[in-house]
Image (cartoon, rainbow, N blue to C red; front, side):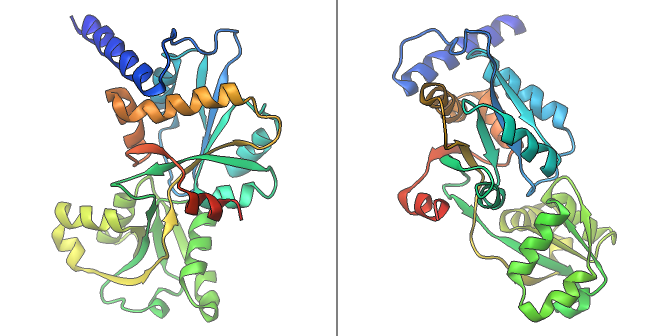
Length: 281
């Protein structure tokens, strides 16, 4: 019975997809035996179960044909791979990494993540009382769901230039999620945490006592959510457009929504002109 329910869901999912795509075709887009890939690397999150992430995305993508998902947890390995891959694949990148990578490998931004109707988010630096100013964090530990490189880069943007000496002595504790970063402060493992404003609201519901013990030291500027892109040169437009349609359809199926939730986003959307201009600078 469970099997037939699963098949039923897939049939409904397929019909919804084709309505969205405006096509009446069989869902085997890549039938020539060549795997079309979606590559993922995001230093803003320290995902601790890449096997599960890959399995979820592979299940979703495989319904449409010979598509595969490949996540990376090392920036250097990802970038070396990105240099060699064909132009018929997609990248899912943080906006921070997109800006730096496109200087090495020209990229074409195609989609942007959306969460709660927004294309941007803010990070906040929170310390546990009695720490009340940035100077108090010299040589202390900051918990973050991002990589050390990304976290230090973000902090450097958030603080004054004369505070660089303080950042030099800070230790970064990498954790899987923003909630983990905040809980690390609650457990005394770290003296401060950097997390999204949304996570701060979440911790207020989960652990209001911890929220009361936190002091907001800094707030970042608006940060763009992850970007879907392809190589600018030699791209197979037909293959790329099919993958774009598949990703945009994720928000209309249960398995697609489950995949999106692992990335803490609601949907993939077309990039508004003002953001496109910002990305192409």
